[in-house]
Length: 270
Image (cartoon, rainbow, N blue to C red; front, side, top):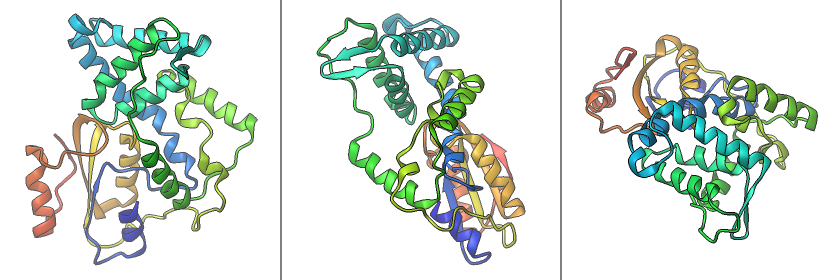
């Protein structure tokens, strides 16, 4: 976002490398989070494939489709009948949130399995739920996101309508990206309300994007790339997780050339 502001306001003299791009063309903060339902669905495919490959020990389905169906069935059961885990109630929304947080890094996939096994066990179990993201990190994230751009203050009927719409287009996410955010009740609105990308200037923006990023979905990166037109180049990496591995052989050399020789690569996927 900082880089986006820089190249939007200063058409020359700013060289920007974005790792895991979010949607920059914002008229309100909720437009970025509304992409999360789509990003969740895309990222889940990587987890489902991983879980299916380990079915001999994980026991949640032998194919990606079977894992997805079983996960969705468990989530819907939790929507109707939450379970008590220690002093915490685990419902469908909480399970989706745990899953989404763990999708940010394939190394966290076992945490989804742990929460899944807890959810499928007897109610009242003392087995603790996994903590994927510490509270302090979330507090800092909200402090930045909520102050970065204005967020609409939807009434309850509008929120319900948006959630229903997301459920229809991306049922796996259960409307997760359209729910109520603290930013909607922030103590003051940020100004300006959004970023207007500046497509005029040198070719000095390189966007690196994982194809299945749950937090900064691919669709937002594509829109950002188009908004900056000829100023930007984009490399899409066929990987999941939030944040690109810049040491990957297919991009490390291109990053070095961009930063040291001002050589912007063409749009490509690797």
